[in-house]
Image (cartoon, rainbow, N blue to C red; front, side, top):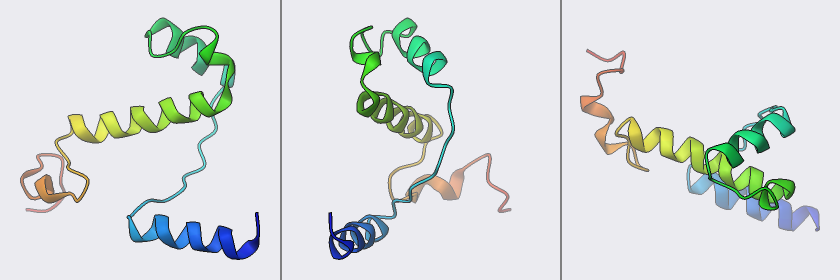
Length: 84
């Protein structure tokens, strides 16, 4: 992949408000937890792209449970907010 392609993808993600957070997780423990939670099958848990996808879904689920929409419109009434 060329540098120009990477830069274009990076800009596109930024426009959508997406960032790439580096998160270190213990791969085997995380995979086993996903299998136990029935989010992945044992065979799927061996595929790293599926682990990444599930980690992204877990983060998205967390935001949904906190009542935040993708554009944070509900953040004004957020009981966890530091704003008065």
